[in-house]
Image: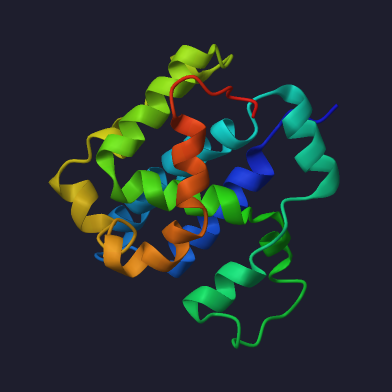
Length: 174
């Protein structure tokens, strides 16, 4: 059984950092990627909380980046299918939730608290510092990724679903 969400997390992180690139060189790119990866990881764990959920997305696939590409205007770019096969692992809902977490600090805190309280096997051991408390360097590096106006089209896709998911009294597996 596939319980590993790493292909989905890697592809969705790559899509986010391609759509909203870092500004300021190699260090900025690394800091931006870490922030995106932390947000995508939290979103993926919320979206697929059980080993069965992870196995199902591993078998069925994540859905791909086509709609996200269209929303951000990247759909008209000529793409070699071999070079962009990773886009099939992009999860639209996870990308939307991750953007919500990156642009709304209070929501990010609720999401990480939900993961920690859920008993997720590794959530208690993962530090989400760059997501929850970015320093000035982090904020500059991910200025585009954390800009609520620029990311609004992606965030609005599934924000309501994330809010419902994080509402107290609802099941994490719902």
